Image (cartoon, rainbow, N blue to C red; front, side, top):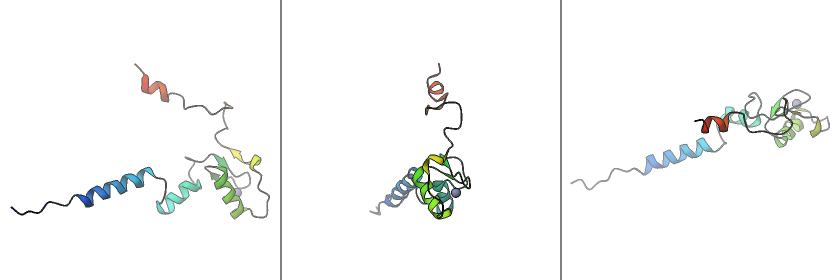
Length: 105
Ligand SMILES: [Zn+2]
């Protein structure tokens, strides 16, 4: 009998940290920051700057971008390009096929 239990604490903690990191949108270094700012990826971007066409996920981020990049210009939220609105529908709709693909029989 060794009387020594193998420590599992460390691994469990690591997994929990990984899950937390994976489910919480923070960190990620440069890529994570760019992603949240919506600078070069279109994925989360909802708004585009009417001046330089940089994208941002929301008006708060766009405001930050505007203040940083175009401090001499007035910030006009109504002039922002709404990328989600560029299409046929006026109202936000759930993605077509999402529900159908789940309940297809
Ligand atoms: Zn801009």
